[in-house]
Image (cartoon, rainbow, N blue to C red; front, side):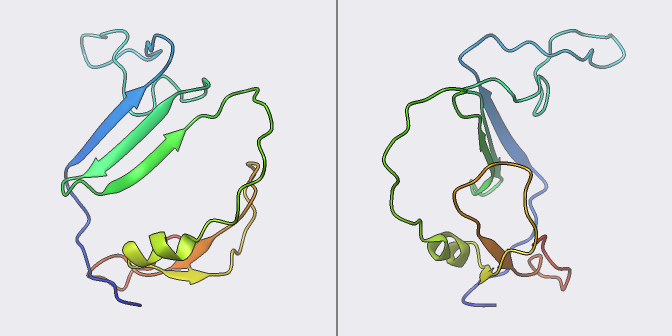
Length: 124
């Protein structure tokens, strides 16, 4: 699989959320039923400008989610992004996409690989 180095899945993660609006959770937490404790998915990340970042214990990005503006002016289309740079850095091999997302997109990219140190396939 390319020039990849195998990595163990991290047991510890760091997550950060931000929003241009007040974030108050809708679920009650724990036995004391504490209201308003923001978690990775509560409140649901649907408001424009919300950002969710997760890092593993080595500081590697494992998740990034940014909710785009509901309305924005159309900008000129940029050139095609070279996904091979990111796939190579992550130890993944480029592949042809096999399924369509329900979300809107300008381009698609896919990869193949295995979980570090195992033969278990990664999601494609």
